[in-house]
Amino acid sequence: MTAAAEPSVPVIAGRGVSGRLAELAGLGWAGTLVVASRGTVRRLGLARRLPPGTRVFSGFRPNPTFDEAVAAAGARADCGATLVVGVGGGSSLDIAKAARALPPEPSAAAEVLEGRRAPLDGARLVLVPTTAGSGSEVTRFATLYRGNRKVSLDDAAVRADVALVDPALTDSCAPALTWSCAFDTLAHAVESLWSIRATERSRDLAEAALGKVIPILRDAGEVPTAAERDLLCEAATLAGRAIDITRTTAAHALAYPLTVHLGVPHGLACAMHLTWLAPMVERAGPAEIPDHHDPAAVAAAVATLRRLLRAGERDLGATIRSLITARGLPAERRAEGAPGLAGVVVEEGLASNRVSGTPVVLDRARVRAAVEGLLPAGSSAADRRRKGDVPCATTE
Image 1: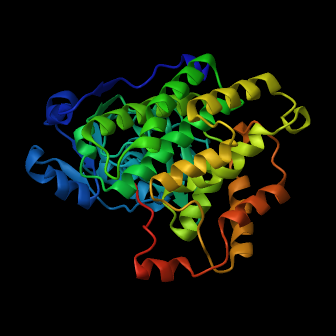
Image 2 (image 1 turned 45 degrees about the horizontal axis):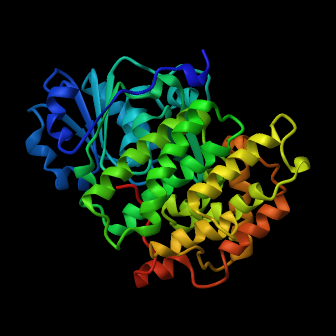
């Protein structure tokens, strides 16, 4: 069975649908583990909405670690959960996936991550996103970190049994978080559209997502309206379905080190890399396209992006940069030791298997020069956080 033919996650969407969580998820069954950050538990009043005896796991941070995932798996095993419910941003949903899929023993869990052991699938998994961007509610992936290295669960068994997408849960997201999440959607759709693994289905999904998210990024006010939040949720799920087929590409691979080392919010980090990667794809000649890929497919993806982005006389990079600045976000990040840090970002990013889907051959020197352009020398990330200038990486 091809990835495109695999069944997709059923989605129940609409404002207020989360109010039916107990009914639709089967809460009240013996053995339920709810994965949610402490902030989400407090903000949504989950403690008073969950049936007595429901176990809540909140022992994780944004950009969750392998150890936190194993702890979640241990919590699931301890309470004998037959149902795992993830509520929150991408980090919460990824930990919920890991809680269902991983054995509670670290060595066995590592074997699952390395593809040497099949994931567990003995519990049902219900995901409820509270941000619009990660698309994790419909993908077969869960992103974790071991030290500074990003690792992924990637298996059909990781997918949820059902997702509840309630845009009302995103209404309290601050604008900066909302826009960073929206840029994650944009990057998912752009990268899926041009991926060498693209299919007719994934291209349709990616184009539909871009059609919803681009006008909002370009034209919205400082704070998105309820109607715009509804569209952002729809776009996030569409783009999530697209990358579930294709995976992401180099922009995502190189974004993770920016988040780890500089605290750049994930979606913004992806968009920053698109500002140089998109022109590289746009200008690529046949010799720069992988031998097993069709140059006509790359040209078609570029043409679609130019049309949807209304690029006009600008290249794709300048157009994406204008979307970033229109949302009041920085398109570069000043950092001390920028040349050395750029080298770290490139080495860690290009080591990711996500790079293999990129539709151009990446020359390491060109990539490093591009990343150095994103990291002009300046004050350190820690100094800027103390001044309140840099939002910490978060998916909640």
